[in-house]
Each structure stands twice: as C-alpha cells, then as structure tokens.
Image (cartoon, rainbow, N blue to C red; front, side):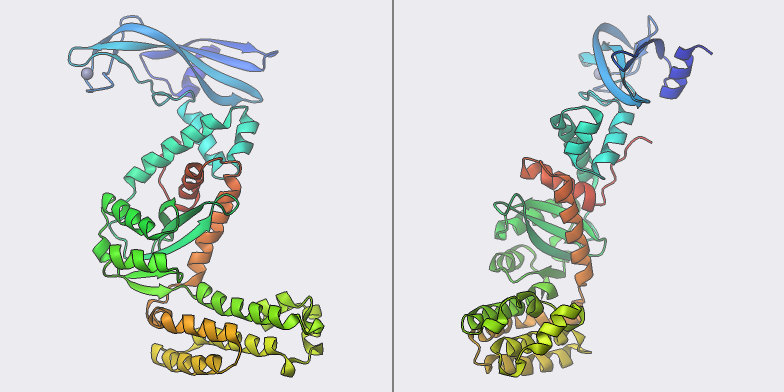
Length: 404
Ligand SMILES: [Zn+2]
C-alpha cells in the first residue's frame, strides 16, 4: 500500500478528496499532507445545500492536524470556491475542518479535551500555538453547545458570586440544582444579573415562573433580583453563608477581646473551626484557656448552637430552636453576636426554608470547587469572557459534539 493510501484511510477521506502527496521533513520536525480533489468534481453549496456545483476557482489553505509522533502535521489543500446557480460564488466546506478554523476537527477535539483538563496557557505551550487561537476555538465550541442547551426542566436554582481576577471583578453563577450544572454565568453581582439569567433561561426554553426554589446568600441584590425576576421562587438562604455570618461575629468578638487578653493571641483559627476538626495542638491550646471567663468562648458556643439548627428534625422544631437561639444570642451582651442574630432575624423565613427545600450544601460546594478549578485552568485568561467560557466548559455539562 502506498503511504498516500494509508494516510487517506487514516484521515477518513472520501471522494472527491484524496491524498496526493506527503512530505516529511525531519529537520523541520514537520509532516505535510497534500490533499486534492479530482478534476471535474462537483461540490455542495455551503449556503443552500445544492449538490452538483462546479468549482469556480481555488484557494490554497493549511490546517494544523494531530501530531505525527513528535512532529507537527499539517494538511494542505486547494479549497474550491463553488459556483451555485442560486447563491453565486461560495467557498466550499471541507470535511476535515470547520470553516474559518486553522485546525482540523480531530486536532480541535484533542485540544478541547486538553483545555478541559489543564490551563489553556499550558496547552498552548505544549502544542506550540498562540493561546489566542486556542481561546477562539474554545469560545466557538462553548457558544455552539450553549446555544443547544435546554433549560425547560429547570425548577431549582442556586445563585452565587465568585471573584474573578484578584477580587476586582465578580461573576455570578446560576446553577441548575437538579442537574448540578452551571446554567448561566455573567459579570457582576447585582440584581441585574438575575434579570440577565431570566432572559437567558427563556431563550433556552425555560420558564422563569416554573422556578419554585432559589438558594442564595443574604445579599440584598440577589433578594431583590429574585423578587423581580423569579416571581414564584421561595428563597432558601444558603446554610454555609448563614453560618459564616455568625462565625464572622465570633471573630469580631475575639479581635476585640484579644486587645486586653494576650492569651487569645494565635487562637484565631481555633474559633473558626468545629471542635471535631481541631488538631491535637489546637485542642491543647483550647483546654488551657480559661474559657469560662472569655467572651470569645461564649460567642463560640453561640455559633456552635446556631449550626445545631440544621440538625433539628423538622421545620417546626427548627423554628422553635431558632427562637431560643435568637433569645440567647440577643441577650449575650456581645455586640457582634447581637448584630448577627438580628441579621438572622431579618432573614428568618429563608433560613428556615432550608427544612423544606433541603437544598444541599454539598452541591453548591461541589460546583464551587469546579469553579475554583476553572479559575486555575483559565489562569492567564486575561478576560472575564474567557473565564466564563471555561466555567461553562468544566461545570456546564455541555455536549460539545466533538468528532470522535
Ligand atoms: Zn447555493
């Protein structure tokens, strides 16, 4: 078998396309495969699909293909512009690459698999291409797959924001809770993000009125956005954020007390953790402290009790428990704890809603860790647009429809 026939088989070429030559240059570490079509071949019009269009003229084009061992491989061909009776002169499509791409479909499939697993910058370096070319390809596949994504079954949504570049910019994520996927992400963290989500959801066959449960933190912007754009959604305040508010209050008590109480130096992380997770050394430090006389220790007990809310067996038990907790916290004479309790009071129903919605923290944390991974992979991403594309790629459960 001649090597051109072998290449033809390997590339899956069918008539009128055939391999006419291959040039291997070991010094340049490069393999060039020449493809051509038989004289007199007819083509499909790329615009209307009419078959049997003759070639009008040709344009020489090159595509990067999968490496041949350690050598870069390129496909070169003259691509016909075809004459269609309806559409005039049009550049024909070739079966091995999508229009306007300088990569073959198989090379793109490999690159997309790589960028889902490692930073785009790293992939660019590994394959010896500039990363802007890779980003252009990522945006193409993500946009195509996003256009096909279906939001018609969505009824439960978690909303969370995350810092983009060094905390200067934010993106907000909208997660489909049932399918554990990022449905939508957009710049900012204000109420308008919810408006943008509602619009996007409608554009993907979703019904904003069918959204019955939403999980958010206590940000007034999200509360307002949900009220305006997801009219039938009951709000659950995310358990993690609720606990964090009480935990932050403990830290404030500790900082104030530490000024007059040197024993507390270096204990910050003890109070931020749960007793079960303390290291032996931290436990020993805690045991040696005169906890009965420390405000910080009292504040810490109030926080631990708040967490016990989520172990109550029912919504009724939870409501009763929270009332008692509120009384205790507001009578603690610890200003940060009183303020945290008042914040809890203002968000009472949404905190207790957890007993009905049971929106699992694990899911949101799982998505968050995917987003953290996306940030790492988008390192050097230069724009929030790039970050959003990687978030979709990694956490969007998109069907990219890559060639196999
Ligand atoms: Zn046509």
